[in-house]
Length: 198
Image (cartoon, rainbow, N blue to C red; front, side, top):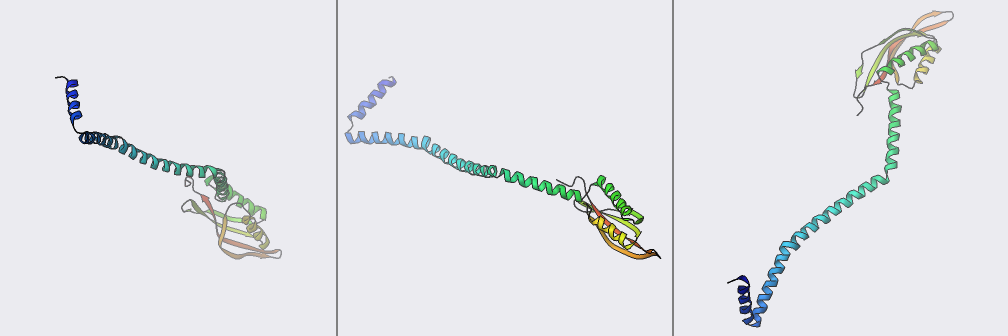
């Protein structure tokens, strides 16, 4: 018996059944087809659709963030430029090791310009902090009151930071021409530690 005749025989059997039975069989077949479609096609497609919608929402959120950054890119670039300018200005006040020697020479030259005599000028051991180091300088200078005041005024106008602290003032010598004061103490300047900037 081949398959076609077998199917033909089964269809004839179904055709002989009462109408209600045939409708039940048809409803069962339609139910099986619908159930198969739902579980095999619709359910998996629906899950994929939900995943794609969630992904779409996430991508829209990221797109909004990118658009927000893009709309403010000029403001960000301006802020970065301002911060770099401030950093350069601050670094000018904190010389690196090479610039420090120039600063020490400048202080010595200021003393000569102000008319004071620098008796001693010794750099002492540095005190290292996070990104800078304190550079103490033991100094002993001599001059008239006005010359010393002019020297300290000139130091205060330097673009670099130089702190004068714990100074001891004594009369060096007195003559008919005037009184010479001798000042000893510590001047502290600071230097930027190379490589500490990220």
